[in-house]
Amino acid sequence: MSKFISSLHLDDFFSAANKSGLSSCLVLSSRAFALSIVSGLLLLDGALSPSITSAGIGVLGLIAAQAIKARGQ
Image (cartoon, rainbow, N blue to C red):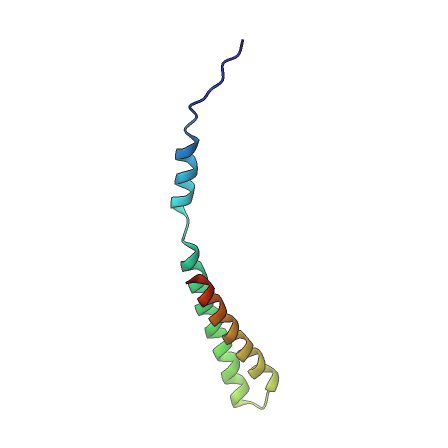
């Protein structure tokens, strides 16, 4: 007759996996910061050259960066 192993210490394994990763708030904040820099550069490019497309993408990127930042908090 086989024995059932009841003490595998699975709780220790899963709690260590949760502690080792970065927090989702930090990841979202860093992504929002990078997106805002790229969007700002696109907006600046659109302002210095007569490119409406570049300025529009820059504005949309800034709006998206603010949405990501608000989602993380």
